[in-house]
Amino acid sequence: MTRRVFLHIGLPKTGTTYLQDVAWANKAALGKAGLLLPGAHQRRHLLASLDVRQDPALARRSGDVSQPWQDLVTEARAWPGDVLVSHEFFCAASASQVRRMVDDFPDAEVHVILTARAMVDLGISRWQEWVRNGGTQDIDSFPPRSTYDPTDEWGWGSSDLADVLGRWGEVVPAPRVHVLPMASGHGSSEELWVRFASVLGVESVRVRTERGTANRSMGVVETEVLRRINPHLTEFRSAGDRGRWIRSYLAMPDVIPATSERFRPGPETLADLARRGERALEILTAGEYDVAGDLALLTPSDVSGHRHPSEVSEAEMLDVSVRVVAALMGKVRGVTRERNELATVLGSQRRRVSVARIVSAIRSRFSRG
Image (cartoon, rainbow, N blue to C red; front, side, top):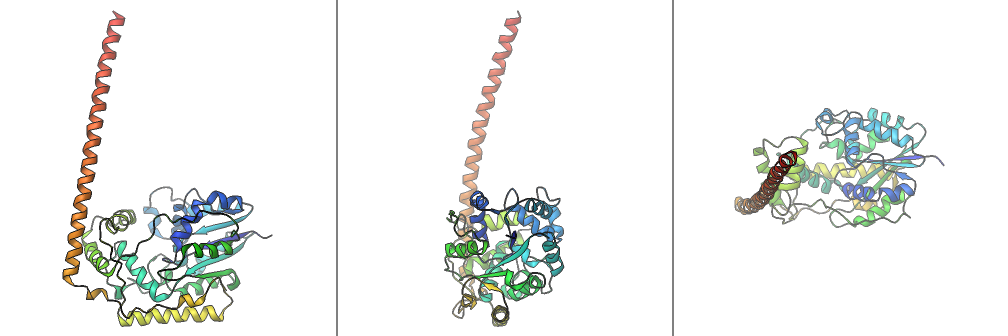
């Protein structure tokens, strides 16, 4: 049987975090079934995606960044069974970059897995995620760059399903491109895993599918508040700082209140997203792609009853901002108390060490006498 290399390339905000968490939590079980996740940890796949797309930001990342993609390739080539490489930023790769990836596995059959959702819902979700990562532009100015650039993780190159299918389809035959539509908002994560595992051929492997840290959606008010805060966070511009302190601290529900009120873009943006979604559906319907699921899930939900972020009132934003300040005060107090307690313990230990050294010195002097 021909070895298969599965490249799960996104799209972002389509259940990728959940699928990756389950896969890595069950790496040993999947390995026993013949499926390898190369690399010591999940982050190596992120770094490999930067490497493949020749992103200069790779050099600014922490850890070993010398040749992350080649490291995965080397390990994968030595494995006798199937291989899974997964990160949502791979989808932005150019056709020539995709060709180089495929050529790195000359003795294997390369498959592509694309998780997808309705374009209107995806566009809204991606803008919110961009704000959670320090973005400052309003929803109708997103993405920040309109021209395609493989190093741009937030542009149409990583969001527009039709565009991604076009670039990857130049290299990988359509029957080996597996598209998994997902429901927006209330779909079953476990059901998505079942379809994902079926494509990989590991559906019979018993895995733990409990969700770890979910990607929480913010409501329209808190998203707009965060967007207005971000320009002032001038010391938090590296990818590490944005991820740790904005996305995983300031934007968390124990700091910023969670209302989860859904919202919509302006009419022109909404129409553009709808057109892009229709184009993707036409391509999938007419092509020979392997669709593992119901294409009807890619039909956008009705957002006409939702507010545009510009409709949020100053009073609503003030209320959220006041709560954020109160939450941060509580956290500062907690951290200060913890620091003081640790300082007290450390001081006590130092005093005991000093006394022990004095006693030891006295004993040593008397023993010599």
